[in-house]
Picture 1 (cartoon, rainbow, N blue to C red):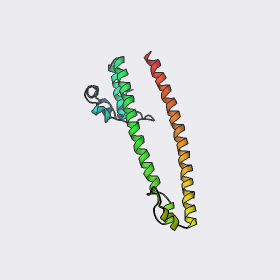
Picture 2 (cartoon, rainbow, N blue to C red):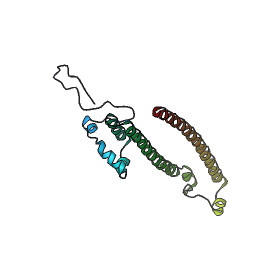
Picture 3 (spheres, rainbow, N blue to C red):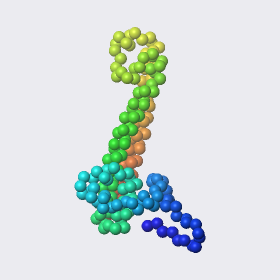
Picture 4 (cartoon, rainbow, N blue to C red):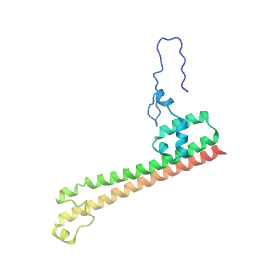
Amino acid sequence: MLCEENDGDDKVVDDGVIPKSVSEPNFTSAQFFDVDVNNLQQADSETGELSSQLSASELRRKSCAEQENGTFMARQKRLEFEATMLFMKAKETARMQMEVERQARQKNSLIDNLIGFPISCQKKLSRSQLTAMSTTRLQIILNDIHSKINALNEELVQLLMQRDSLHMEQDSMLVDIADFLQ
C-alpha cells in the first residue's frame, strides 16, 4: 500500500507514519498492516462484538483493506455496517453529552449564592419558602428563570438548525450512495 522510492540516498525516508488526515489520527505502518480482515468478518457473522469496539478510523482502515481484496457486495455490506455502527455510537455520545451539560448547568447556578440556599436542585419551591423571601429575592429568581428560558430557547434554535443541516447532509450522502449502487 505505502510505497516509496529510494533514489540511492543512505537515509530511510519512511518512518512508518501514514500522513495525518483531518478526521483520523496518525497511525504507524505496523499498526496499519496488523489489521486482520478475517477477524472482522468473523465478528460480523457471530455477534459483532469486535466491530462494536472499533473506532471509525479502524473501521475505515478495514474497509480499505477489504476493498483491495473483496467484491462489490462485501464493500456494500461493510459500508452499511460501518454506517450503522457510527450511528449507534453517535446516539450514545450525544445522550451522554446532553446529560453532562444538563448537570453542569445545574451546578453552576449563581442564583443559589445570591439567595442563600440551592434552588437549582429543587424542582419546586413551597409556598412557605416563597412567602418567607423578600421581594428582591423573588425578583432575582424571576430574572434568573427568564434568562434560563432565553438561553435554552437560543440553544434549542441552534440545535434544531444543526439537526436540519445534518439531515440535509445525510440525505445527500444517501443519494450519493444510491447513485453509487446503480
